[in-house]
Image 1 (cartoon, rainbow, N blue to C red):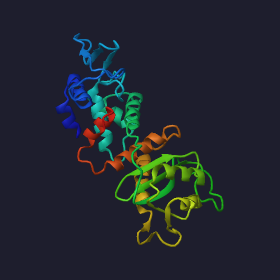
Image 2: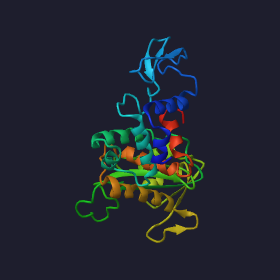
Image 3: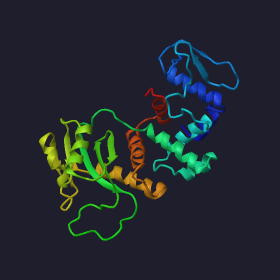
Image 4: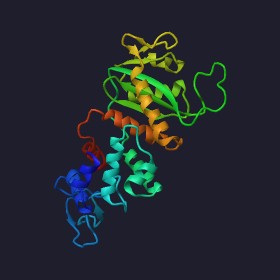
Length: 285
């Protein structure tokens, strides 16, 4: 859904609240604190969208327990921000989002990070042919690379795995070691799959629990079905978002930017990405 459609479909705060109530409750409001259906809407004009629970006597809104909880920013701007982030393949900076929505940079950054938090995926294990690789993101390299040093150590390491034709999983790591790589793969890859990697020694222990094929990049990049081109393509998207929009990831927040890139990759075939995300944001999808 584009920005024009957002503005036309949700012109007021009340229209936004009504939409959230429809997708979250589907006509049956429920108290988020005690799960009771004995609730009633407040009638006061200055309490738009607020409900009272007759069971636990709590007061709540449809935004309780969602990324919109406690916000004083109009929901129209939240809806527009979601559309902007979802439609931006290479992401969008907080400065650009602030200009588009007439917000301060700090407010735009806060909204974007809440939206990214809802993009975290802990779904089913990757299956079939699964490619795994690691990369480094962050600032420019500093200092010369030491002889025999295979990876740049001054950036944030990221480990990832992608199911060919399917989903990707990626997350930052404090360092790239055999132990951390194996831990990541066991949490995200079905052992009945075929794992494809390069010749980095960190993947050697994977042979103990999964069928493992390797490609020697010093000789060739493709050997029939053995290649890591899919995960390399995903890394390209991640790095273009850095160089084109964010320019720098802090270690503290790198995971959310990776989650955003992963979520967009995983929903690339969806015909209704905005609707799908709204379900997730309300805890339904």
